[in-house]
Length: 368
Image 1 (cartoon, rainbow, N blue to C red):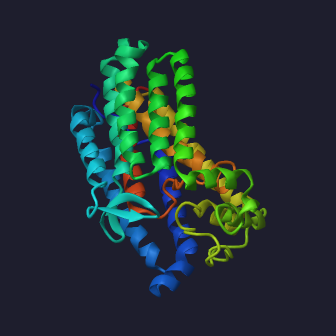
Image 2: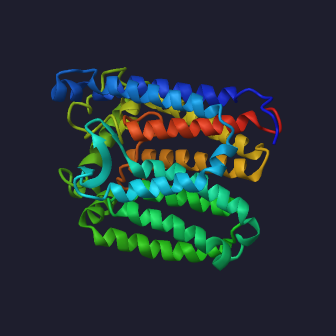
């Protein structure tokens, strides 16, 4: 393997730090009213987000200095640990229930969400599997099927919590990796049909998911129930106009929009910073995607290319789904906005993944 002769990708690093900085400001603005009401401290959520960000940045810096081939050697152990915690969180008395889902292990604000770590663990292992079985990938039974069995085993455990949004992001990212690795289009067509049938079954199996679909189609049919979040989100996005109401001047954060510092933080950004502020955030994500794809294309080996592709896939599927939900394009799924939303597991995990991505850029074969 090549020696580390190049610096980190500066544009990638700057875009990450800019998104993180914007996120810290917006977490404070979006959560100040709720923090004052719940804990008598407007800085309650910001203080915790600073701890999460500090932990994540420390992890990113440390991981960025570890050759990414290290994760290939330990990929099976990492995956087994992730599966262990996915099972552990389902045990009553160990797993914590929040929002109707048993998805957390820990105490209070300082708890972890195993499903978040499975997303990265699966990418690390699947990238190694696809490299080792590259010639078999076009074959469904010998190449693609074992990978799908592993992915959907993890998806089944995540759905037992249940957490459809996180599971969908993991599955979507893994399908992208399979496509990049050389899986046949016809296999994806067959899977698409099965996937639609399975997705319909998951929706029909839980009444609250049916309500989310109907509220997505016509949120005003139940404005105080299933359609409440989407309507309040649109009420935040619409008045923002071109320049926004100003930092800290959101109206929807005053107990209209539920949990504005997490899933719907982009709505608060649009309300306070307007189209220009929201557009700036999208530009930062665009730069991050560009540099992430560049890292994958210039990686010195297939493992680095797949690993970079998977990390980019997780980030940008979450961006697509979150902003789609906020703007009423998708049903409510409970997906956070990367690097911006309040939350320990998601932020720490994504910054750690960014550290791997930064290390891949140190080994790039060309300078960009």
